Length: 467
Image (tube, rainbow, N blue to C red):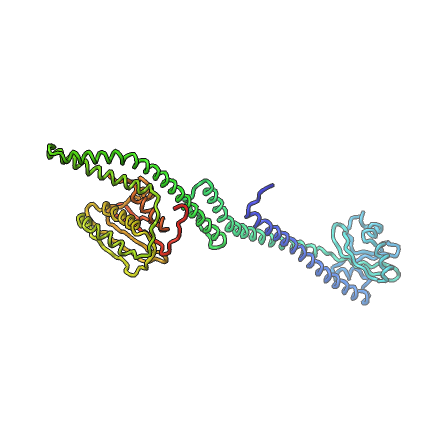
């Protein structure tokens, strides 16, 4: 079965209906005009006859011809031609028998007899010309035929027909053009939407369908964009969940294999440190070894924390004191790195449920990252405020910033640009926030600093399965 486009389905029926209407209306109009004109023509000629017969000009056919521009033929009761003004006919058509047949005198006589009337009218063609013939039965049984040319009616009909058809053709073209534009305006957004759905079907969820109209089609495109965004978020969350699960298994295995030999190394190093015969240089080397073992142990603890399933210890409590405690703990470190701390903590935030230890851990990770981004010093600004049904925490630094390429991967486990980083800090921050049914976002440009925004809902609900 042939497939027609929506534009064709919209335009074609309407156009066909209009074309039919445009043809029928002129034809009906022309026929009505001809009928009215012919009626007036007949009435006028009948009036002439009503004048000719009483005045005695009936037999003076030449005067009648000159006066009314008509032709006169008189036939006897036996259909013989008595007199005529129409002399231009060819000899073959000038015979009484031919003229009686052309003028249908036998039919006219029968009509006079049956209808009991003395007048009759019909159209005939003689010598290639059209005439309206008016018959009168005159004494004694003769046929008086007045032939009036009707070429002017035919000319008027022809002129009117072509004029009406010309107007109809122009209007049809105009309607076709307008219908095409209307159909195009309707179908172009649909075609764009179909093309966009094909891209989505191929797995491209990053594009957005352009909304060109503010109508139902525009609403459909907007709804489809929202659906695509939700689908992309669900896919990203599922991928993130799979990455976290894989990373957790790897971290647990890695931490288990390292921690046992690491404990032995620490114990042996401490035993060597206690021997009096070792030199100061050897003691310093052992101290370096112990410091590095401690650093590795902290990394292993981070891996185990990341791999270990957690349960939130939710309590109804204020947020600001928790953040102030973390900042107070890090105040000396901030001063040492020549970082000025600016606190804009809203004092009127409502209490809500959250795990204070987890939020401390997430907040501290963000602050530490901000400190490391400002090796030459700078300003660290912490802002809190209520936004709709959530509390927002913003940590703003004036550090080196992050490239656009790296921002997309910041929350992936083990992704880091630091020489001594594990790549688990921000992954843990994201996990903690999502466990609280919150979110975290990062805005940054290279050389312009970084803003980390964390949202915590005032009403805790179980996070979705993707978290």
